[in-house]
View: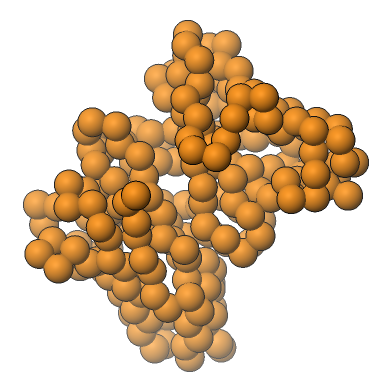
Amino acid sequence: GENVEQHPSTLSVQEGDSAVIKCTYSDSASNYFPWYKQELGKGPQLIIDIRSNVGEKKDQRIAVTLNKTAKHFSLHITETQPEDSAVYFCAASRATGGFKTIFGAGTRLFVKA
Amino acid sequence: SAVISQKPSRDICQRGTSLTIQCQVDSQVTMMFWYRQQPGQSLTLIATANQGSEATYESGFVIDKFPISRPNLTFSTLTVSNLSPEDSSIYLCSVPQGYYNEQFFGPGTRLTVL
């Protein structure tokens, strides 16, 4: 079946440093790649997404890059803050035609003050 | 984005009983999804709840164990039946919106089975 692999499973950084989370997907027809942040006791929250017609998207301290040829995409968080500590999930889906979303295993990010 | 609420937020249940989880959306949506998130794990799709038709279940999930109702376009329930400790998880509903079907999640229901 379709699969999304996510690395690393755990990431610990010092406040102010950057954090990078990487994902690869198997379904070449995927054209939508969202990222979710899940804080303790809450549901996942969509923080940024990228569509297959662009290679990079930025929103303040968060950026995502997409390499369709290699079928991988990454989340970059700059100037990390303690409130960035959470579990991050990448996902891949198709916009049309039975758009089941496949989630990565998650990355637990710790930002040390 | 849609505002989604779930009830209960958490519950502790005895083995063999059932728990019904409610999901309410502040706007009409065609599809609603139910996910299970086992402790420390990712999200696994249980089923898609469509208004006016039977829910569509993913491999490994059956209607007898996870019956779903979808009485209107803003509400759905998921029942987890004949509970066992292995059912201890967070259960989440979500709705897709927009052309790319961006998914928005409810806050989740944390179930503990003793």
